[in-house]
Length: 280
Image (tube, rainbow, N blue to C red):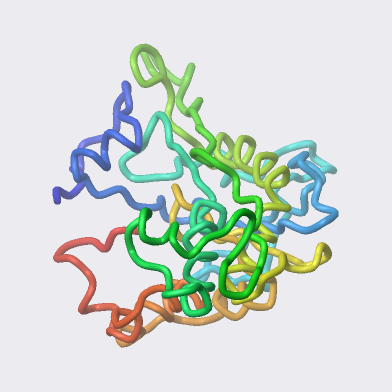
């Protein structure tokens, strides 16, 4: 895995997928996406101006969720300065964003019913199918949730840098993805996906039913290409936590993901980090 160079970024910018394929390290820009206070509630508006999106104060080591500034200043009619920052280092022209929860929903449901299914669910898709009947689990009769089929994702394309200088943002790759490019595309998409997210998080939490419709959710930006939703209380608990070098991988990623890490969940995080910068 190579590390980013110190050369000033110039257009055309690569896509996030191209950097991943080249095994090039891609990290969050300091004081960028990770500063977002991003609610996803029943009454959350798809319009950013009235969405409740805010920017947390940047602390010495981690953002402070209790000190926030609105992402949109209604009085000034302006977006927060963080909106113009690139989302990543190196800068990217495009990124495909997925919902971790919804993408993992089918696997989570199969895992939840592994023990009660006749003979148990096996690893392979063909063997796993032996534990299914039309519309549900053979063991307990629970109805399989309406998991969306296909790739549940949205593409964000960059406009950053366009018009800032000769050639900037022109040609192959276009501009770089800014925080505003990201949230203006991803936020309304997540609002429309909220029903599926409630179902997926409910399954991952060990239930055969979606979370209640009024459940307050927060968007977690730990991984810029795979977003997770957390219940508000859990999100605040994790946001206020200060990871130490001895923190386990499960503690860093959150309680719901920890359940799927198996024997790796309790390992100290430093044992799982590659040499050089840690992959976000």
